[in-house]
Image 1 (cartoon, rainbow, N blue to C red):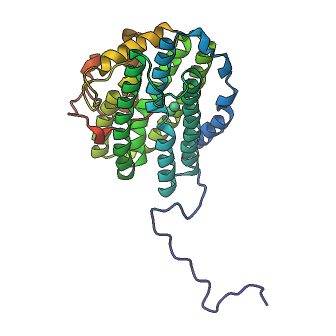
Image 2: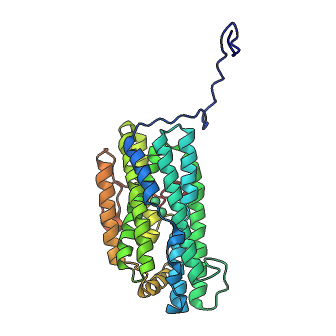
Amino acid sequence: MSEFIIPKDGLKPAPEVPQPNIFPMEWRVETPKLADIYERAKREGFNPADVPWGSLSPESWSDDEKVAIMYWWALLSNFDSSGPAVFSRAVIRAWELHEEDPVRKCFFSITRDEVNHEECCQRVMERLWPGSPQNFEPKSELQAVALNNIGWLYHNGGRYWTGYKTAIERYPLAIIFTSFMMGEVASSTLFHGMSHAASHPVFRDVFSKIGRDEARHLQICISLLERQWPGLTDEHRAFVTKQLRAGFVFLSMILWEPPNQFWDLPDYFLHNHRILLRTARNAGLGILSYDEQADNWRVAIARVRKLVERWKIEFPAIPELNIKGVDVGDITAEDIVPVF
Ligand SMILES: [Fe+2]
Ligand SMILES: [Fe+2]
């Protein structure tokens, strides 16, 4: 006689789990390339606590320079520090949609990396200007305009977050990741350029470490899209075209200068922003010039264009950089999905 209880009319199957749900659990592998990237992420990742922040000596910069450098990191945090929350949502979504195991793990690794990038923003700011980005009493005009501009940056970051939360529920992950791709291309280009241009070894080191992570994020996006794009509908393709323009609009704030769309800013913002960036550039942070940034953007965009055109996705017009393409109309807060 069996130890088990088996009813005469057989075992009763458990009810099906209503979807979307993270259950039932399984560990399917469809794209071994993504599994390899995840293994690499575990080995290549860095610990921000091991960076010798102590050698960033606050005495070697004037107050204006320290605040200007802090301002740039606060600007970066508008993008990089939203990464943990943005990718956490993508991780949860990937579980609910029962994406294959390497996809879920790769998204998790991006989240892990973005927490590290956020920690770098935090540590530089704490070291150079305690109380920054927003919790300090300005003692000069430069400090007052930096504080005010940071407030406006975060106001726009908040508008982006609201739009993103809706989009992540509404569109397939492949579509969402096309928007991320523009961010990953942009950020890997940005950090690569700055790792060469910065004069302080700590900044050079941090930029090259972050740049290596971003290059891996880009590979994740590309592998994912190679897998999923053949099944895209025309509606999805049109959405992607618009997202590429949205990526340009959103990311230009850190890659170059923002165009006159989406960004809700007072008239004086850009003027003060340029002076703060000039001060940080002269202090050796490694910020490229306006023309160098424009050239970098063009190169990065050409890479994205080549990738998406393989999948018969039209490219948007970017007249700001003399790039021809289709007109996608206005870009509003609801359209912005891209992240670093
Ligand atoms: Fe990042
Ligand atoms: Fe990234």
